[in-house]
Length: 270
Ligand code: SAH
Image (cartoon, rainbow, N blue to C red; front, top):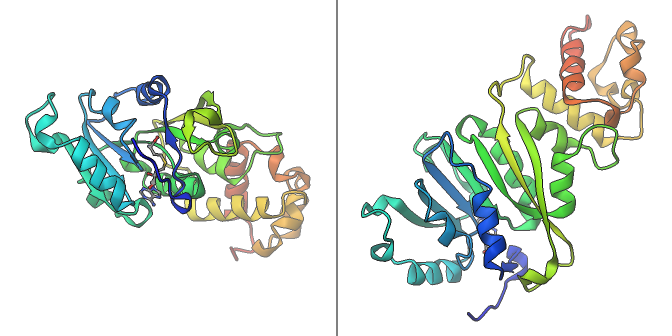
């Protein structure tokens, strides 16, 4: 296969079939009958996904890749199912999609060897649409994968960790070195799996929770009483011990508790 990767699209094509199969196998296939692959490129993951029982949609932004995929995976060559719905190739930008429409309101797992330049945005979009996404797995830049999976008390624990883990259990599965890609990226890659929690809504105002987490980590070295100044907290509240902590010291549950305290604070101006 000839490859002229387009850097601005984050194109690093996986060249190792064993790893591609391992990534495809990271989906448990439980609790859904639909899978969306983001950024299939030359289809190295796609061919393993097509062996699954789920219906497969792939969304690719690069028209040359789409042309290639249509050529390699003509619908009539897909043995497993005669229905044309088994496999759909869509040309488009994942970040611009309305997922409820795209998924026809059906539970859909997401997978991909993601374009690293937009991988955090992909995760945030999945979180926003979590009621439709029971499982999400794939390859990220290793540092980002670790950040998503990280627990409190670490330098890389941050907004992405807290917001993801509020709704999903995260497992770091394995690391992939640069030399199995064409062209090789400058960094290691990591594969993770997100499994939606049975209860994926919060007992507090979610908008406020998101704002508290983001605001606290925007000044991660400061104590909460100073980084959360813009919330106009009462003096009494600010004296509570939690406000002398820094954001990386708080678990997801403690962020939920903190949000609840802020929501119930007397000044009522949040
Ligand atoms: N899955 C393939 C390609 C990975 S590279 C493999 O493992 O070899 C990332 C792919 O994502 C590229 O094909 C790139 O064109 C595509 N891509 C980049 N931005 C995208 C977007 N916003 N929406 C959909 N696909 C995108």
